[in-house]
Amino acid sequence: MRAKRKKTVCFFSRLFAGTALTPARKTLQIADAHTEICLEKWVGERKYTNPDSTLEDVAEDIGISSLQLAYYFRIVIGQSFQTWRKKLRIRDAQVLIAQNPEKSIASIGYSVGITDKSNFRRQFLEETGMTPIEYRKEIMGIRK
Image 1 (cartoon, rainbow, N blue to C red):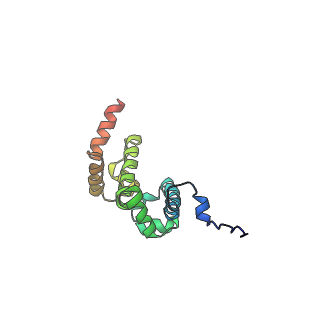
Image 2: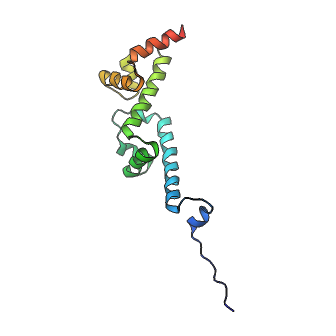
């Protein structure tokens, strides 16, 4: 009688048993989740307001490779780092405009990391469909 051979199961097979995902894809999902957590912390610390931050700087700051971060933005988020950061800055600017009606538009742009006033105006217009001043007027009209 033959002895039953003990079946060797690798760690990933046990970890992902019952899932349709391959171990490689599941590993990518774990890496993506880690990246997401690190980016949430980076955003929470408002590091996106640094006007000189690049994808490479962010990757180094959160402890992953720039290739992994570029992959995360391209595949998981579906946009480039620059586009994502711009949207984040403009959303932050909208909040600051609403909360600080007396603050100058240029200083709001600077506080979200866009140091050039005309560049801030252009980016704000692209994202919201109105200039920062038009947005402020609309918000002030809603408040009254």
